[in-house]
Image (cartoon, rainbow, N blue to C red):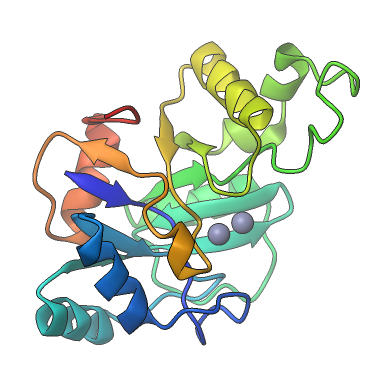
Length: 206
Ligand SMILES: [Zn+2]
Ligand SMILES: [Zn+2]
């Protein structure tokens, strides 16, 4: 099943320009099987997610995109508003306490504007970034990264034996579902999503 692991809606994420209702309608139209709402630093509440899923007869799952000192991290399973800016390792501890899952979001976005060779950011050095010691996976595909940045993320994932995922990071309707992760099994709940992520039963190519 096709899951878009990364999206933002307005007003929960002020940087987005689409309502959650419009996002769901769009996702259904283009054949996405489940959408994860990953607003910045604040989770949706469970009742709202259940109501949306029921009203639209569509799988809506909640996650969160947390700002850390080591970059943005997608988290699943943690349901508290993040008021302080933690390090990736501090965040991982909190997520581990609740049995959740963490993904380094767009880890090289903007890093390679002039090409990583020019910036001497070799894959070896890139793989040494702190964030990669504190996440369970890497988001390699994202609407806002270049092919070079995606290639570097894939390379780093292979070197560190970290699985790579794809998420649209949609802030507008046109970007919904642009990148999806393909899961082997049916997922209906956030708990099932976490279990399938942990089991590695997904891939990023169709
Ligand atoms: Zn981000
Ligand atoms: Zn995002």
